[in-house]
Image 1 (cartoon, chains in turn purple, blue):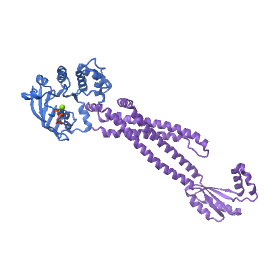
Image 2: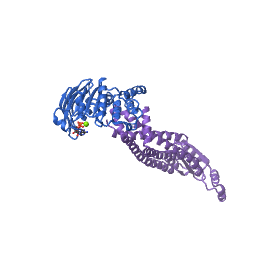
Image 3: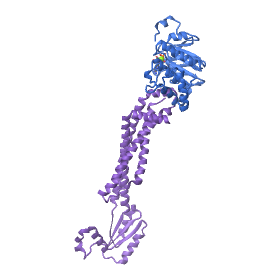
Image 4: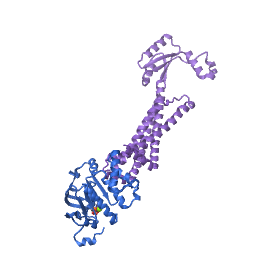
Length: 290
Length: 236
Ligand SMILES: Nc1ncnc2c1ncn2[C@@H]1O[C@H](COP(=O)(O)OP(=O)(O)O)[C@@H](O)[C@H]1O
Ligand SMILES: [Mg+2]
């Protein structure tokens, strides 16, 4: 084992240019992997938040008696996919609008007397995916003027995530292949440089696994170091993002780095090491038959 | 120690290097394999340490038919066989000591064993004091001694030499052959393929002569060649 480590390090030092190239491609591939991972995790995060905010607005017919309003509320609250129902009176609606307008609330002065805003229910969902069915049911209730809900955005976001993930997977896969090929080439160069030594090893009775161990280790080290660099870059970049994006775009929720980056680092180190090992195994299989 | 039975070796290019070769070598023997270039001497030695497989026939070394070994068993066979070549096959970037120790390291020997046996082997071949020299700083004879030290460091029961004196001047060659004779005296069986007529003729050892892949002569206390015409044209 000590022998394998020594030989692997010796060979990386001797072959440093190819080694650097391998480490860089491993790193590049994994940085891309990380970018896709983080971006799609964040899109999914936004989609989840939006989805949990899926609400049905139920606008009521003008001048409905309070008994009827109470009936409608109970009916809606009785649906099993509904989480809660909140009543927004005409006055509440106007107050909200004024709040939203803030400094421009003067504009409302004209309509204060004859408030045109309808009373409504805000219905939040227990199961957001049922929102369409529930909205249809509610629309059929008498006393309900109209219903509206924003669902399209969530759908579109989830679609974007999916497309993004598919393209990402392809790109990362292509990069992974390139990485494996490069690592494999590096190992092949080492094999070539040491063919004399390998022949002598075979002659004096070294086992195949003994001969291969340093090369597998070399691949492992190249992959691991590349993955380590990729992790560092990713961590630094994402930390910057979590600090600066909320400053620039306050309403965009960004996932905190803490559990996410740790999981990502583990993924990167594992896949980098695996790519390295796979790359060297590939050339060993092809170039060292006894 | 060695028993070849009806061994034929045809290379993929249809060259028949050995054809129907049979002979036995007893434990502790010293055997010269002679014959003109292309006679099949190298092929014969390569069969013994299973660098090549015969096309047909059996090759028994130390009681084991090496043609029946699984690939993973081959390294263990080779640990019992020392091999030296005309071109020494030393690692140019390692010292004498490291070259010899290499043969033990790669077989997983402990550091203690290595520290004990490597100096012994180096002393046995008469290179004490040259441990830290690099191969390029050594004469041809010293390089061959280094490769002999490497061959014997694992205490092989069989020593195979393929033209070990081919690159050496006559005086140095004699030194190497004397050394091999001494190794043989310790009990190691020696098979030496060679062109060196003078050495074969004066050593009075068993001689197996090959010609075009066939054993044409096998005699105790033999000579390189009987017929004058061989003596005339065979100059390596
Ligand atoms: N690897 C090989 N592939 C094809 N032919 C070979 C190979 N090795 C040797 N030969 C042929 O086999 C014959 C015997 O060669 P060799 O055993 O090297 O003889 P020697 O050592 O007596 O000169 C020669 O004709 C040689 O050209
Ligand atoms: Mg030869």
